[in-house]
Length: 124
Image 1 (cartoon, one colour):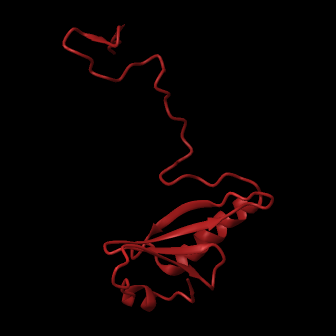
Image 2: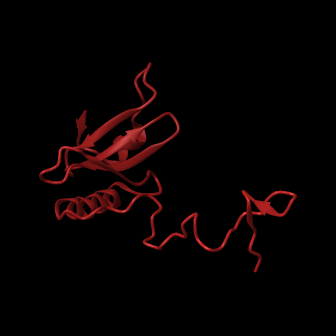
């Protein structure tokens, strides 16, 4: 379903009876989709890089926290990255290196025996 999205349209839109979720494509911004559920309205980028058949979905933000103009700008930025062959960031991804589960510091509390799956717990 494609529509020319506007703030008034997003605010006033009601789900048809019998539907629990609906996605609307914005005709004004290629790749921008608005997913509407009874409790939520969320903007997404949806598109595939050139030469690929697998589309990517990237969550941009929730309405009304993110306005339509902001979502359109974010969509254009993500679309440019995808077209350039870059991997867009996953939701909540900050670019920081995460500590792997097999790192040298064991952050779990462990069992009452003071051991964690047969390995001693390192305490700092």
